[in-house]
Length: 389
Image (tube, rainbow, N blue to C red; front, side):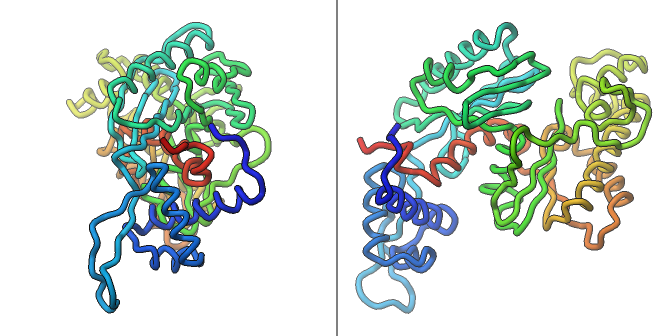
């Protein structure tokens, strides 16, 4: 990893980031087109493209003739998806996911395992060894680092994770993973990382404002304006105790809290108490509902309605241009999306409510998100993460 550059270096890196981002969003582009998009001079653009190409981040395409322009055919420049790759790890309550992606966030490989149990240092050491195994299958790729995403409270600046359900308190996750892998590690909360993936590669790309709503074992939201996530001071906000009605008891002592109502573990506990024939996991509960079990269908419908109510409440608070639903509570249960949308429509009071869409990442959302956290850092600071060969 390259140390912090001086003022001149920061200006050059900022120019390089502008060029890199213009090509990422609009490429392939000629050098003149990049200059138009960035308002940089043509010589500056040419210098930055030469440096980014040397780093393996960009590559030239075959020359093409541009309609309306005279002279030699232009040489388009695009992201080089054949050399650099970003690794990502999402640590969930029950499942840990590893992924490897191209510069455009396209997954090259992903693996899911049950989240290891034990002391957090041992868990992270094992996860790091698993990462090494994954990367060994891609020797032709230059790995720029590891994006590590997790629930709970993530202190990205100090590299620490607090995760109540896992029993982690002030765990130096960045240091542990860096020591094992020898790669720079970027920490982020899992919901901000997923929202970033939507902003860069998904349903919120280009939106003036966006609300990302995640639900699986945990629930969470992220808000973005102008393509930038809002990150408040200190600990992350929480919607776990958003009141959505109902009589489901919560550990906080109240009833009807969102997470206690919709989290997979809570839903499965209700199914067991209702006598739904035992089938493993939330997928088994869906299969029971599809097979005609009325209790299973009722429980999943109630979950969908609670989610839709929460989405409607938050939409009215934030008033975004688009709402993106992510996480397996939505993407793995498409037959209940109608109930989500119905409850949302019954809750929101603002006009123009037809702004809700579902993430296109499906079950890959955790892997893509973890990689994207690192990619976002690379786009903003290309010289800090990549060295020339």
